[in-house]
Image (cartoon, rainbow, N blue to C red; front, side):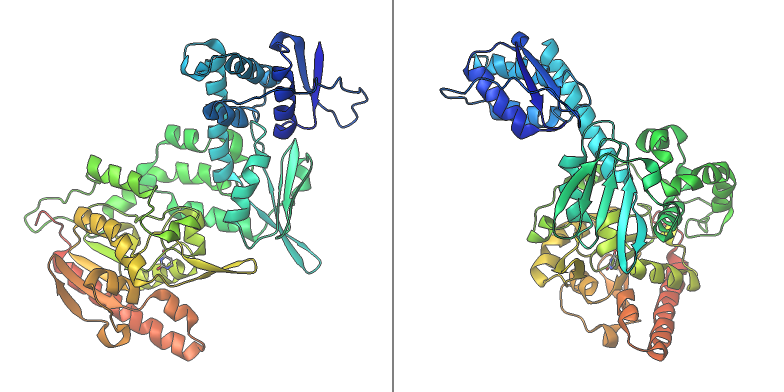
Length: 475
Ligand code: URA
């Protein structure tokens, strides 16, 4: 009998080396006992025999094994070695036997790990810890499988500017901006309690929560209860759910763009379920039309009712939007929301998107600084903007800044000279105005006040022009 003791739960290097030696030496799976070294393991391992001869495995089996080794299942090493043994002994297409119990088990484990990975990427919530002059972000997460190691790279890329620790019961990952390291598991009490960032997530969740679309079952399957205790925004769920019916009623009663047509007919508010549109949204996730996608976390597609009468087009997602996957949720978005409200426009009734759908930035140390998309990138992304404009077919398009102007008008624009007047497009009206980030960059308070008022005035014009056309597209 051969005993293999791996260094830790996802010791892929150790597993691979042992498998190679065992298989090449002809040691059958039933003669191998696998385990993982305990911190205080005193037993010396019986090393596998030395490898002789060649050892080549099918690529799909290697990739399945790399995933399945993360399963929280002590029998996974033996399972994988059985499959590898069979492939090594001539069953090269072993994974195609989908009814085979070992193949089926391995595939199910891989699927469960992928699901767990998705949950970890969606539900890790950092809290700010201030240690002397240093700021660190710490998160507690309880994965089902051993997935911290394989996901650390994702969090490094996504939170490029942060120093963070992700603590889990079995292992903790730490990124100091330069180096990644792993330490022992931790306890929930190792993460400090409440803070600003938790508050941010609560406000964010409350703002994206749509009571009219509440489906408690679907919500729980997307955000399972077991994660709630670590999600600051989950504290808001019971209250939001309890108030959903009343808020929906209030939304229905509120006068808005979807109010009765002059003829007394009601505009159709529900999104027109359209499979071509659904397919486009799906396809956009894999967009490689220009190089920007390489460094962005995800595509940020437009958002809002598909029958919106007004479409707002910004430039491109920023740092916050890149993380949240939604347009205009960061500082520029907050300013935009405020200005829209002052102009009497309800953001929930508008379709909001960007000329360019991936975040383009330059790294400065740990910060990701916005970089303006060039004409080629705007042109490449017009593919998606055209699909959105064809689907939404807005009566009024608001162009926020030069990139949006260029994308829709097909020429360079001078925003400060051309702003605030209605332009006739082939398919509706457009108003060009400044981008909210322009207001955020203004150096002094007086200029900010003046320009903000001008911005609101432009949006009021949009609201006025949208008035007579706000009765909907069936008009
Ligand atoms: N700036 C934009 O142009 N779009 C966003 O979504 C956010 C900031």
